[in-house]
Length: 195
Figure (cartoon, rainbow, N blue to C red):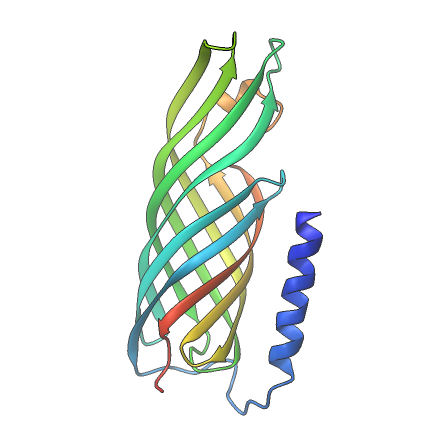
């Protein structure tokens, strides 16, 4: 259901932006400097939903910055025991990317995120006693997508990506919430193009 709602929002944004007249090229070198900050909403292949904050400095077509999130990734069944685990994760790190044309109403972008943090699986033994497994984690997440700029200071990113992590204790669960395809939409504000 979440994927369907996100897909309808994305299609509406794309059709709205394509209706505007734009004589700008898809690929163009931008000579200005700026920066942006905002948030992204991601849906992973297991329907886990996360909201993260991000910000970056823009130098010509390239950007570099940081991101962070804390998310409840869902409930997973143990393969070896009759237990369910609630999985959460907190990650922060660096991101870098490239805009095909930061001044275009509709353009493309590619980005990579490298994050470090922790992930926790928690299971209730009784109402007051819990078993908790915590592990540090490294996350690598390349994304490819479309940018939409309805106004010079607003940037909307729609993307698809793949998230990979080095977690080991998920081998005993019926899924890995930190690995697999991800879909997202991001809203950023700032100096993205010359006004």
